[in-house]
Length: 267
Image: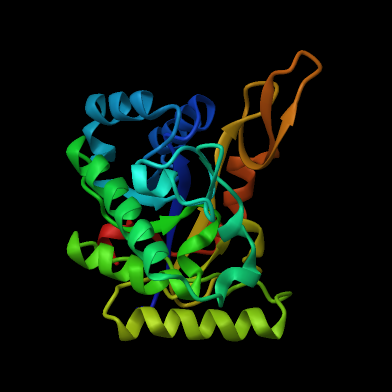
């Protein structure tokens, strides 16, 4: 969608995935550092996420679904039995491999994926989540073979907003730029609302006219400070903590160049 102002949506991914990131995302929301969140349906901290939403209704209509096919335990029995995508009861890395973007999926694969993604949406809806938009873990919704399935699932659940492919990193290879153009055009042709631009905070050299989405991953570092997680680290004691830049600093340069913050509901 086009706009005359430099408007920004700041979306935090992985809500409900771990206790640490879930509480960090909520803290960022409370401090008005982010505008929206996207939530997984198979995370280990879903009880915490649901409790935070129940006790703080302001976040309720700012939650999208973070489709997941690359990590954790599937929700459906049929997907658990699909050895192409699942190993030892957990999603494997099949959809992390971009070489698989163009590989044809069998009828059974499509059925299993459709049922799994449907189950993920239905689970969040059953918990009272008002799903405002959709994206995915490891950006699997950008997979060309998955797109038609994701479009179908979203239409059936009246989800009209889907995250576009990254398109602000000037260092991207020509193929990535071309693929992003094709995928983003496909979103529009299929009638889905979306932002004009999308990328991580560090990929924005400047803010452009229109609507931009900035993706962040709030979490806590080893000192308990709020950061934009780039990777997970392990202490000598075996504790897991996030490695990244302070979230406030990461967002400051982008927000200083934006004229307005909006939410996904406004797109």
